[in-house]
Length: 257
Image 1 (cartoon, rainbow, N blue to C red):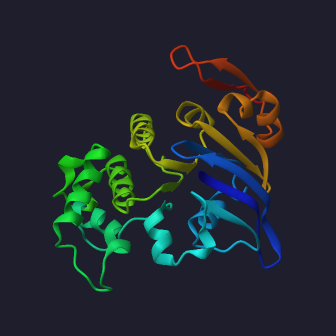
Image 2 (spheres, rainbow, N blue to C red):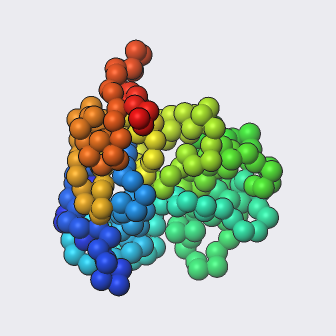
């Protein structure tokens, strides 16, 4: 059980964005989706979420084909946090998190007054360490706080799969480490598009490395993040050290000559 990608391909106006991508990700693991700009990371997340439809291939979650689900059923199973997914109107933190309950409403225009919705929202905020922010206005939060609240909103959907597109963008180092630690502690299957290879190495169980829309490497951080692979994909020289505490690979880049 988990996430299975079977020969996914996708093109826009005839230009291939993803080509024949296949991978299996076990339940409960955290996967880092890596690759240069334009490699197809965001597109792959949208295909997995069922927002876009692949030209070929399929995605299954716990044995169920995502393409067979209605949008509402897919939203109950999968939460996608895209870049710049901020509310455009003035909302409190609680109101933002309650947006994650929309797929679970029994009526199209149902309210969020039910005890269950609020209990789920409070639990989600507590899970990401943001319980004290419940009454704050969204626009008064720091970048790191906003990202935590957005993850709480996603968790309020009670998904089987959490997808995050560059969740550490614009965060300082402390906020990045705290946020990714929180994602790991949630205990749900997660796939995160990241640019920082060292963060992926430290917080991910599995790595999918895309280049030019193709999956060029898949495996543990130690298996994927090697000088040869990094050099071929990113065009940079590097050395791999062993982290003194965690034991995971640490990439040290060589300055351009």
